[in-house]
Image (cartoon, rainbow, N blue to C red; front, side, top):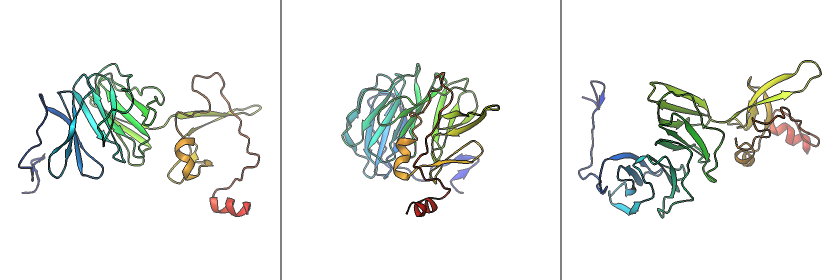
Length: 268
């Protein structure tokens, strides 16, 4: 028989000596480090622990700070940080090497945080809550990115990014799965004397560096070293609540073209 039997996953290999160390209650969350050398666990006893994946030995002391059970844990893509979500409604960021807390707890949810994860590029954190919403935060500053995302009618138990970082998927106790665009959509008005036109575009460039409108048309190209900061969703030219509904761009001195090689050669 293979590892799948009657629709259930059968454990093929198990460790002879399970990792033990929580002072009370069950382990609610586990995750591997990106390099596979470490394991982290979150527990009902309100702590996070780091383990050596090869030997099973505990690394350092338990990470203390949460006042409720730890519901979710994960590593940053570069392995330098750990984030944890707790029943105490907060998210905490930890230094994976020293175990020290990084900054203050991230607050905002009104009920238990059930799931936390990083974006593939490590720039953002998302977390889902029993309060039926999930939120996006800047991983470096901790500042909120946009408003809480609403749509579920029950607790959000799980959230994840697509591999390219352009979408977020959320699972809920309302028996549904929602797929979301991971960056804010901005409505831009192109002024005309008689018939105003509107186009929607997303602030994040595609894998080739192009920012496109809602129909896939090219708007502008962003050099690789500028994409992260220039197109952060927290850097909107016009806040959605502003009474100003249009913006003008000055392209004097700019070089326009559909391929960088053509623009570069024309400049030379």
